Image (cartoon, rainbow, N blue to C red; front, side, top):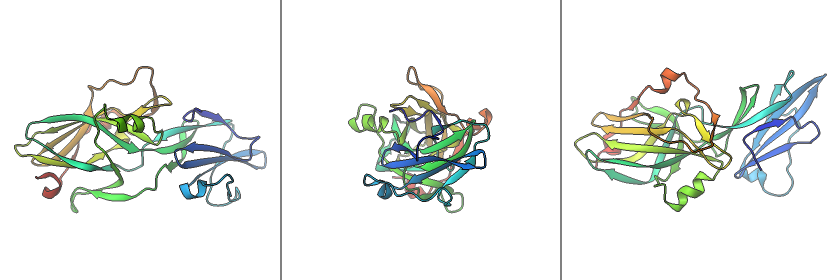
Length: 258
């Protein structure tokens, strides 16, 4: 069943439930006078077990409520978290001086509800945790994630590509320094990225990470090919000029030095 699409208001349903992995996004319609109000909330995995859902009343603060005015539908769309994502690699590896490696990393998305193109609510599809990427003096507060660095041919890559909770990032890593570096963390700015794909797979533009003696720089790498027949499912949150700003990070030596 297609999930990421435009939906009519569930006027004739008690509550519409969108199942994405182990999360359930609940959408209902309330009336205030002659005005429709859309109510939405996300259930944690433990609340989704069993055949029956015990939901609070539509007046409960657990629901996000939105007056629909003349709108008759809403869109369920994938979205990046509102802050950068630090992906901790489960298996760090060494990158030799002057070498380049390509592969895939995956980050978890959110489920966003849009009305007339405006985001009215966004729900994490995994319990969100925060971490610090970089040094205490120049660190960036990030959403924490932990995934593998994968080659396209690995079986796990295929299963993650097909998981609606993840977006795939084709990446190119280059060591521009004269010393080996250990790649253990990669920081992604979702505000600069699109989500392109179809109902089965989603991916961003290719990212380039350059490791040097001063730290790590992230930028967009325009050499990637997008899947045939794919559509833009989420646009960047920043302007075209901001998309191509190189993000630099000064890291602890023990994070990058072997």
